[in-house]
Structures are given as C-alpha cells and as structure tokens.
Length: 390
Image (cartoon, rainbow, N blue to C red; front, side, top):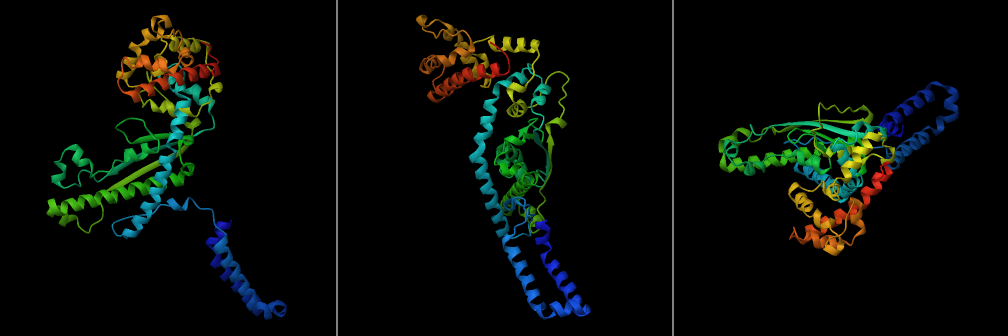
C-alpha cells in the first residue's frame, strides 16, 4: 500500500487539490469553512508528500541488484556502477561458501547411501515436505560463429579467454549441473548464500546482470583483438550491437512437485544427492527393515571403506590398501580396528603414522586423518539417529 502511495504520490496530491478547488468554488458552505485556509491546506499536503518521499521507503527487491539493461549504447559509468554492485555480492558469496559445504558434510552419509541405492530418494523427499528448490535452464548464442576466423583457429585454451563460461557463474553460487555438458542447474533454497539471493527476483537479476557484464567484457576483448588482427571483421562489426545473447529460465518450486524417474540407476551428477540430503532430517527418514539390513552390511563390509568414499579413486585405493595395517593388533604395529566407528577412539597421530606409508604429502596426510576421525564419529551418530544399530 505504501509503495503504491509513494509511486503515485504526485498524482494523489494533484487530484486532492483539484477536488478541493472544485469544492471551494462550487460549495458555498465548504468555501465559508475552508476557503480562507485553502492555501495553507495545499501547502500542508505538499509538505506531507515531501516527508513521505524522504522517509517512507517502499518495499524494494534488493535495489543493489535490480536488473538493468546494458548494451553498447550505455555509458561506461553505468557498467562500472553495476560491476561494483555485482562485485560486492560476489564477495559475500565467497565469504559464505563454507556454509553450503557444512550442510553437505553434515549429511554426507545420507548422500552416499542414496548414490548406492540403499535409501530411496522418495523417502528422503518425505522427510522434508516443505523445502524449495531453484532450477535453471539457460542458453547462450553468439559464440563461436561471431568470432573472427583467426580466433576460431586458435587452440581451445587460447579461445576460451574470449568466451563466457557461464557454467562457472552458477556453480560458484553452489548450483549443481545435472549433466556435465548440459545447461541445466539445480540447488536447494537453503543452500543459497547470501540469503537475500533466495528471493527469486534478486537471484535472477544477479545472474542476468553478472552475465550481461561478462558478455560486454568478452565482446570488447574480441573487438580489441580484431582491431589489430582482423581489420575486416572489426570494420564490419565496429559500432554495431553486441551480438552475444543469453537466455535463462529460473523456477522456484516445492520439492513436493519434483519426481525422480530412473530406468535402472541415477546417472545425474552425484551432487544432486547432496542437495537432497542436505535439507533432510535423519530421524524423519523412514527406512524399511530390509533396507536397514542392506545399509548395515554396506557400512560394515570394511572398517574404513565408508569413511573415504568421497576421495578420488587413486587415493582411496591407497588408503584401502592400508586397511590390513589398521586392523592389526597394536602389539603388531596396527591400531586394532574392528569397525568403522573405532577410528575416532584411536590417537590421530597413529593414523597419520600409518597413512605416511602411502602418502608423502604432509598436508594430504593430515587432511585424510581428520576426515577418517570425523566420519568415524559422525557416521555412527547418524546411523543411530536413523534407527540403524551397528
């Protein structure tokens, strides 16, 4: 209501003045009562409007990221101002990146169980009936057909500096690309940081402005290059509209409206499971007794396998090769490990000592030791919360 009043404030005042003028002229009784005070009445109305214009702020959609159209005819200052605003938001995104990773880590076991077919995605859905997701489909055009032929002949790496990698823009904010070479992205609303970008209008404006600035930057690079290396191309394009374009469809929908259909197995990016798991509540997931047995067998088939699932294959294999040493008795130089949850009860220094038999990188050794200890404790607690005793 306030927003409408402010937006139409001048019209309201003019209308009020007009009506009052008519009353003053046409209604003798009104004239006798207020006619002498009419100038003061008008002045008060104007002052009130001025106060409202200064102090009454309409509800705005994050004004610092309102969408603007930036084309070749816009001033350089306009682009610079928008760039400064986008840079500010980018710095906030960087600062808060760890929050999403914390959500991932907190429910990593659930994601692994989903990816191995031990927990149904539908069961995870049921545990979070009120959550929202953003999905994005996008399409760009203009490259490479609008590049000078001399650039087209360059290597892929050399050519990349003239192209906008909008995949990175979405992934930096934490979106999951469902298929590596397709422009379709998804993210749980709870994993969007900073939180002001959870507003659909804010988020779409951020992306379209960010990408719009990138298209200008890249086209300027092309034109600067062609001025020297492709004069004919430069002459044809100079002063004309930037041919680069980008289209985006972004939707905010309830998790209840999604359906996951797989003929055999889920071959989307495994991080989709992270998104689903990160918004679940472990104690709300309903697991059938047969599934509980399958999960129990999965986590107990190796004392360390479940703890290092996320590591790259090469390093994971090295750690699995060390398992016989971990399971040896302490008297024989091992740690006496029987179950995966035993690791966090052992001195981390001993785990590091064994890892050094396969790894030379001190940083990597400490990182993997921390991971093993943390998962050992966390996974035991997670399974207990899910009603699975191991």
